[in-house]
Image 1: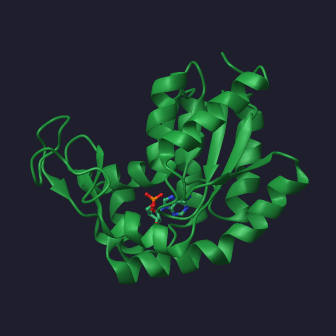
Image 2: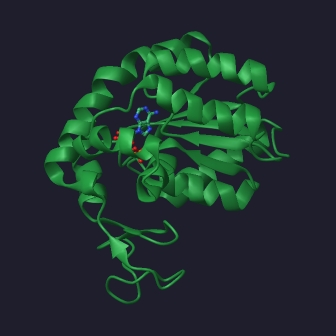
Image 3: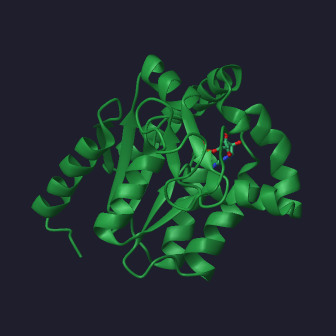
Length: 220
Ligand code: AMP
């Protein structure tokens, strides 16, 4: 099962990916997570990406496309499939992805477009906290950790992402809006787009999706 998750920051792509990973055993490839790891390691790629990311700008297409190609073609992605989260973010990336998928011989089953409204996005992202150690996601109101500031999973320290400050969130959404329409049109023309209400609880979105996957006979 190969999926692409599209949607604005805060639409719930990461949370949905976490649930689907458990349910379907497919690997989660988040270009944002990979870039943050590279930043933490202070690698050349991380240093190059840092300025763009902290300002809420997109990292150049060439850099992110290379990462995805490495994952899908060179590393082979997951045995049971994969979900791409946060890629493609421009039409150029969508076109490059099609070439990568042909090279990797991994056709996409669903492209999920998670639509979400601004108040929901702002609430989710300003309250989001991430474990520094294992990357587990929490929310100050909707999913608070058992102990303040501490990850339930591994005891790591929780932090707010630099780009989850309200000004940067608004800028990321503007950047998203500038780029999403051509991507959506591109996939609509290919007849692959499924529109999902990202304002709903993630577990409801997951259940509806699993039902559809079953009904379509696409389960592994
Ligand atoms: P995310 O975790 O998906 O919200 O991504 C965080 C940041 O990483 C974005 O605001 C961009 O700066 C960068 N990024 C992640 N994925 C991409 C991509 N496909 N293209 C360009 N920049 C990206």
